[in-house]
Image (tube, rainbow, N blue to C red; front, side, top):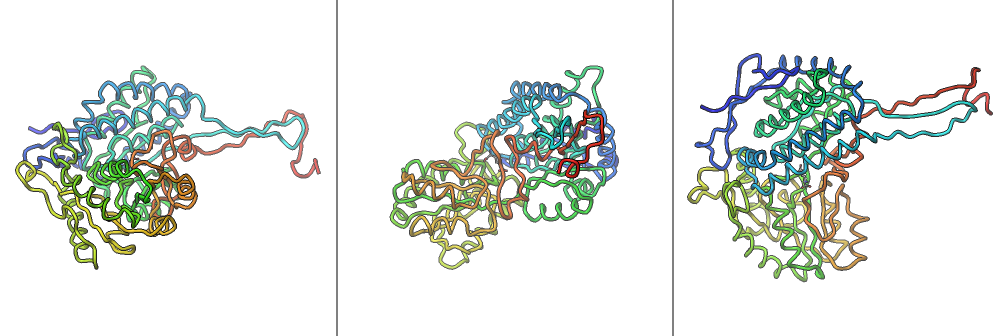
Length: 504
Ligand code: UN1
């Protein structure tokens, strides 16, 4: 019998009102490993959660921010204690290898400790008044109820990037995790709720954190349209992000969108080739290519093109596919059958597109145990030209397109030539080229002599162009998103002082 999981609404774990459910299965062992049964919620469940979060906000906003930070510290401690267990369950439900799911949990722990310390900062800015005997202050106040819609590829890190800063700032949460990773999300919410109960004791506030499982089309839609949801933070596709912005804009919600990418690694002719090779293997095929920061394009200098590709293809064909909780596995499955179909559709497009050459992979991986899951061979197309669909569109799978460039200017133009701008990388030993790239690459993140993946939790994370709407997650910048500014004027002159009038 598969374990049955619930929503958490107003401090109570409960089924969806309709009793409808969905299954969560292991993408590496689809038939044999049923992980759990989760509630498939409707808008009524969302309404209940939003009402609970709205009521909880009036109490939670009054808990001192350092105290809220203490709760986040305990959340981090609990995540640390359960790191291996959470990582194991995450690999089981979404497929990336155990070392990577441990990294995902660690990113959540880092975010928790960062948020904990921010509880004692949340700085405001003060400035002198233009009038005598008057004091001007400005400080941050929480906003209200946040709606959080998160993807399956970083099922721990991404929800923590959003909800930990939101919570420490004094907002309350309605969380709709991806349907493909409901178990990791449930563990996270269990931990947050347990830390709240432990730290607040008899003053525990139900409804600060709520989780509502179900479909984006139903649960997500109800959240973005709800007038009592004050802000939405979403990570996912550009298409869905645009829809969210449109609907949420109708009620003037604050919206943070982290969307697609088509990230490239440039390798110049003076680069350390061995290092660049390690990086592209990690950036393109780590997480089975299912990161918004994944390296989906490799821009190679013409002088080293043939030599580098020969080494790369030899290495790619040695990557070991398998169940990510087994030892020695490099690459897990695609997260679902439909995701694998999308990958395969793009591979078909690549094969048909003019003059692209399939240099590795290009097919399902179905040998032996691999037939049990949604595996796809790590795939490389060479001789890809700027503008081809496989060079322009986000695939979100283990597919790398290699493009030849003539020089640095050409490389940067190719890199910048897509609708997206999340992560980017250049391998070179030439300091002038490196700094030119830092200046001219249009992306939110640029790595010098590093892969396009692996951003750290205390740095701003996000992208330009169609990758988002200008907000950042991670680091200090995200705290701006989760607070309103309040300006306060204290006049202790004992008379009415008129700004801009009495003093000029
Ligand atoms: C994502 O793919 O949405 O920088 C997030 C990285 C990770 C986060 C990726 N720290 O690759």
